[in-house]
Image (cartoon, rainbow, N blue to C red; front, side, top):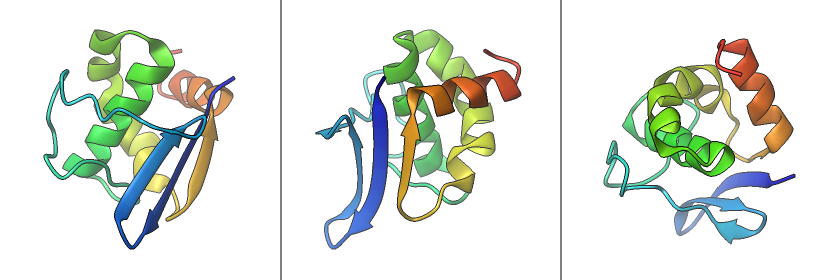
Length: 99
């Protein structure tokens, strides 16, 4: 099971999947040229929602379709430092009626 982790440092926001930087998936959609963000609703959190879902689901079109609801349900509620497992993402998708 994959583990996703985010935090902020002097270099800015950093998100990894199993210790490797998570691809922001600008190739699918650019919500924010600045990259990821979280703890609120907006373009940076949408970019993170898309990246997390694209990696977890392996389906970029489904990830794009679900990114707004996932951003509101999960990403906007994350703390400054956070950890999500694949199971956490699957449970959140069930809560929003997509799992």
